[in-house]
Image (tube, rainbow, N blue to C red; front, side, top):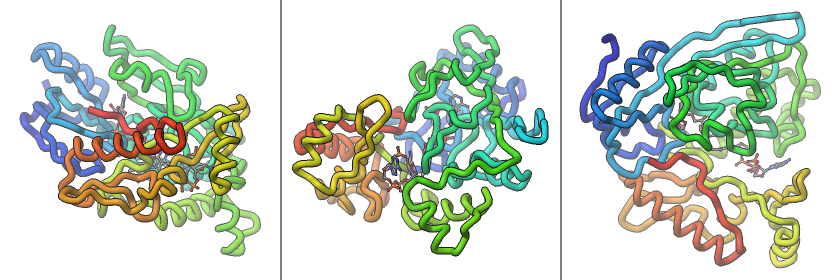
Length: 341
Ligand code: FAD
Ligand code: NAP
């Protein structure tokens, strides 16, 4: 067996909240065979298997009585190129942002709006990662996953993944699939999405009237770096709550009470509210628990932060207080986005 399994490993370096819990067993998978060996190890030792990538969408609330398998497989390749559309494939353990930069270096367009999202390629389909008006479903080709129930490899097309807002079949069937590699369909010609929020404004300010995909990526990196805490400096898992989708009647009623409310009507008749606005206007922006390091970021209320040695339970407790407050004030239920363990 080539898989190196360690006992009693601190997961602090492996989750961006920087929460210090222990894994009963820990290993890194660099190949499909390592994943199979990890499955065999977990069956043999009666231990559940928890697959992680960069740990940037996790809230760890207790020691993990499992074999934690960190995906560390590497490899990026062009599979097809008809001069217009290109299919690229990346292994699950590839880091997302370097993969985006690699695609831009190849002269490919499609991933630029998803620049600077932490984590791995293999985790990206889990919640159909999205930012600035693009989700991976927009550039997704297919993926290969291992079914942990049967040990079989399966190919998933776009339709099979049931992608939705921060959701997929992989998120709904938690723990069933190990995503091994993902394929994307990118373009040689630039098809840019600039209509979202401050992207066009930033490019205009820089005097860039005809942006390239690289210009868009750089603008988005700049915007993100100004607004979002760097997990290497301040522990966080990005947005802690999803933006709630509410009936149009409730959105209209809220808008009457709160004219500044940020709300985006959806094609299905529902309205997406900016959860960050609700939390900020309930007074939580910059809040910090006395006596522990759990808090709300001072610039972006949607981001919970670990100012010091907050435990996962303290962060969860803060999140639940925010949820209760938002439900009472606005009659809106916020759903947590990170995966809780
Ligand atoms: P992890 O946190 O390690 O895992 C997340 C989940 O996926 C877990 O349930 C895990 O079991 C599962 N998983 C991981 N790898 C695999 C695999 N190979 N096969 C099967 N299951 C797997 N998200 C966005 O959508 N948009 C953003 O703009 C965005 N910005 C962020 C900014 C910051 C500063 C931070 C900290 C987070 C942000 N996120 C964003 C959230 C997060 O980066 C993404 O969800 C990312 O895809 C998580 O990747 P990861 O490798 O860190 O996954
Ligand atoms: P923002 O630009 O301040 O916008 C606030 C919210 O309004 C966003 O959450 C976004 O929803 C929504 N929004 C803005 N413009 C919109 C439009 N034209 N049409 C529809 N909805 C619109 O948001 P931000 O916090 O700085 O984040 C910028 C982008 O990065 C967003 O897309 C956000 O989702 C993404 N992001 C995600 C995470 C994460 O962990 N999931 C962390 C950081 C940033 P959407 O969220 O649905 O896009």
